[in-house]
Length: 80
Image (cartoon, rainbow, N blue to C red; front, side):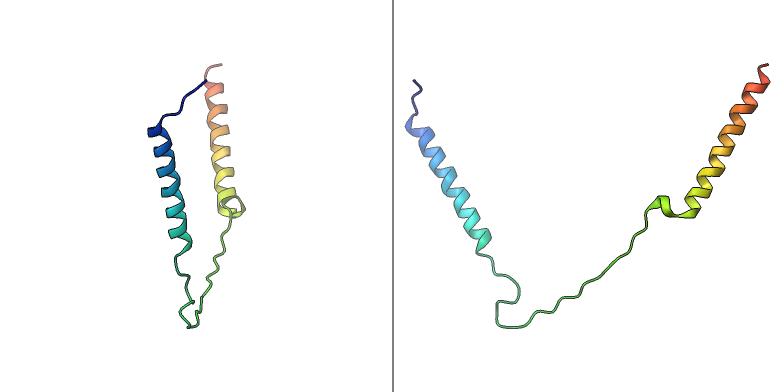
């Protein structure tokens, strides 16, 4: 049977009070627009394209692949 001493119960109680206190403070923050005024927000939209949809990357990758294949083929021919 485990015994729980007074100090560990007190630490647990203080931790619970601290946790509840910080959550109350977090929820008690005022939100924008509750002061009676109106709030206007602007939304900015950004469009992004993936790198693999850009034709320049496809062309560059194809050229790089052709160069690598040519170097491998040239290296294989010189040993024979």
